Length: 313
Image (cartoon, rainbow, N blue to C red):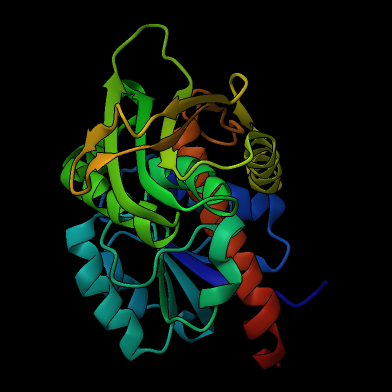
């Protein structure tokens, strides 16, 4: 296909640079229009320049001053939750679609395997968090079979794969992921925990998902989980179950006391995952970053395919 949608990335750190390389190598309906940073010496801007991508080290003000800004239809924001609020306002004034990779949660939460097509008309969509992208599809898979009372996720990532942006947004990570467990995953109550693992050599991203639901057919739940894993693997090939799904009955005579719900019983489903990165820019152990950039690219490709290409003359 000759027609493609021009996109820009704000944030020339690890996430932004990995996303840029994914688009340059594998963009089906997307092409890079600009890479935006605030550090002229950043590796991301240097790589963009070598690839022939227009760059600016003047932040969003530099982007909006670029000659080709009117050609840019989608902007990915890979900065911080605080900075995104200003970025979004300025981009919305220009009618540019925004894909938010920060935990700012201004727009609706979007996880490609769950609800991508539901929010294609939204001017701003939020990619939740790395832990959310990895684990919430599993909560949603259980919710397709049984009513989910509670979903708890623990995302363990290598300390080396957590840059300044991730560390500065830990509180937003837990809040955003918890809310998305409910709104996207279908749980009545959600809780999220992130662990930065300092082990050497660095460990691959590992995620634990614990779901308490109504009693239901265990084979049906396991089949739903396997189908959801396959759906995520379409855009994140390194996503996989670490071991077989585990089930445990919580009887009414011995209920568990859950935060926000009180004494609850039902079926506990335990799901253990790992996410290996594609190593386009970052090491393979940084699956937490890879799943974010892969999910964001998947959403942008769908947005370009269904809404934007027809408007390009």
